[in-house]
Image (cartoon, rainbow over all chains, first blue to last red):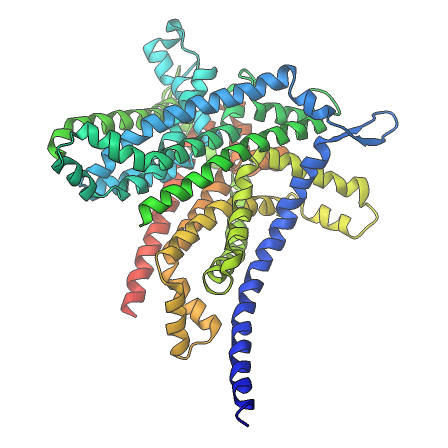
Length: 299
Length: 272
């Protein structure tokens, strides 16, 4: 009898454990199944199409890297480089301008100001796309209010250019930076600053040796997020410049809608793959940085 | 210390206010001060009667509601389960929910267009073909909901994860369970009320995403709100800017309503 007792004790525990674990798996399954179809299929289609060439006459498909090499030549390469340049410059500017704004908000004691700026940032960071483009066209476009009243055209101003796009992109990148960096700035303890000052450091020294090193992962992470966001933007550019500025998103859209040449769909997919690779690189930098900053600021 | 910084802070805030308010103010001026007509509000009065305004706005709102429902139904059980029963799946879900960030919308839609072409090309004799036709029904394009749910995953995951991090789910559920609640009761009546802020946050982010979404809808040939604004912009500059201003105000209003709803229900539940 005594040998049988432990066995009856163990069995309910094990079954209870199993019962508790089962819903865990089950609850995640719908999510995984959904993404497998809604995200997995298009992703596979990009991969498959980017490496496929269809013979126009016979209709036979064969696997080749031809599309990818086409996508890295001539106007396609110009567009890719243009996109990277535009995103890099606007991301750096957005980070440089967003940081002081966030710091001004965090260091002020006013709760109302903080709430107002963060709410506004939440709205403006999502205010991309067509409405943003039209708002800027109305302000600084050829017939825009500021352009006409200040006579900017004579001074060489052109909204439908590279720097015009940078100016417009900053409108949603700066709020995005404010949203990203504010939690990190909140995480800077007053005690760190006090300790630094008690040890004779100046304000500048505190920023250089304490605050910035702690903030660095968040800052870099924000920078990378801004880059990705600018790199993927299509609507703003499409509504504003048409194709005056070569960008990879505009090229893909043109090729997809058959504006350029018939049979360019697979080059569009190859360009998409190029974009995915760049964005993937960006994420590979971003995620570890985010984890690192979380470790400092959560503790 | 704080006093010495004050002028610097005001300069930064002032410049930011200038940069963010001037385009909005200029847009309003642009719409009401038409050259040759003086001050007129025609651009705003014409919107309601404009062709396609109501239908495109309704389509966008329907898509938004459907997307929010689907994404929350998929994500809430999953993220709660990650905390309770399946912590080992956490990296998997994290990666799955980050993947859409790696595929920009334009690349995503290029993939979708290709998949949708498989319908007529390869599947025309199978029952799947009917599904392909059905999800592209222009009165309610389910394919857009599928795409938007995928695009919303990263934001919703982050919002819900932040909400769950702020509370001790395990203790909460165990407390509810030892008070005699069943599993569904514990989830719906103990966990979800504590997640209200995160749920509202996730819903708002999704709403903003769907209302402003242009890339996927345009390249798939549907006409929700953002695509309609774009199409109007070609012919009626004043009205398109007027609608742009209104759409920003609409986003603000929705945000305030959501914030208000969150605040009110919170006080109601604390009383009850």
